[in-house]
Length: 386
Image (cartoon, rainbow, N blue to C red; front, side, top):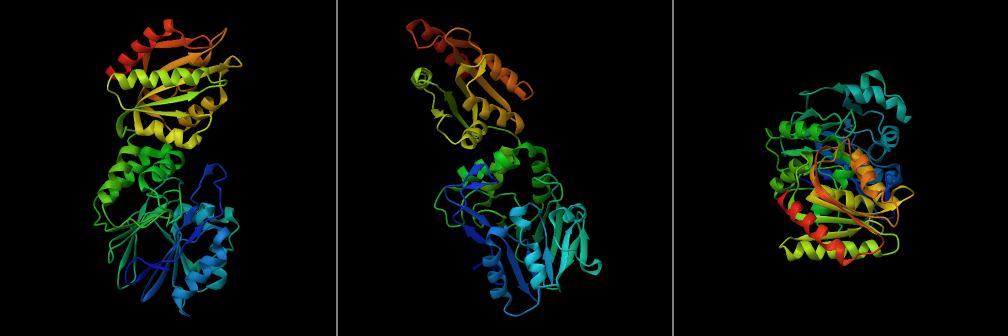
């Protein structure tokens, strides 16, 4: 077990065998289910873990407790990857009092948890404090970050923010990978719809002296906290991180890939930094995350069944569900006889806020030809100016 401080222990588990988190997100480097135990006069357990790792986690908890009773279980978030072992800990420690938000207590019966006796229930609201004598745990409500019952908890002794799903990432705690990339993919795809609610939480947290962020997924954050907070602020405001131009392409037989390569060449010749992703092969949720990273995007896709080639359609539908906004977008469509991609792209994203559609829409008929290049040059110029 990792020590967070002299009296706080990380008792969670790393899951190296899971391949899809929430049955949809690829996690090539596994997943961490974090849980923390405060052992300082009173023993307080912060959240449980997915039932996949329940036995391993309980063994960790018991090792740190070393025969002592558990005074409190704090439930910050009821999603099954965190609540899946509540029954396990309460069977092992029926003496524990359970702390959760008012909303969580209304939802808890949905999760088939053994009923908690009334005298063991503590319902907390914004600003409530659990005074442990040696420290105070202050509770901050965080509704829709990203479920309605969520609370986060501030420990005034060790200056730890137990952040629930905020500041989490895909990957195990020991995954050797940049935090930014997998945290971005996690945030945009799971929490991204709720930017306004994240902004509210960040404003509340701004008044706290935070030295450690202990999220329910990913590593402990103990250094350069300003970097992580700035990224969360950017993501939740739907602002781009970079001036890099993103090209997403979906090609059936390869002709449209040639167009995308040419568009990248045109933009780079004009001094632009460009990232090109083939959404027929790239992880869809990474493509979605990159659309949030970049402020200017070129969508290049084939027409298909009088609509849009499905790999691109899936990306755009996900964007439309995740509150996508504040971007400049150019479109290049390919259609051999009745081009329909551009029309479908715009119809899928029509509900998104503050999208600037950059003209002209370029239409390719099957394969790239010299006559298409002036329109692509014009689109590139207008996108740079946007």
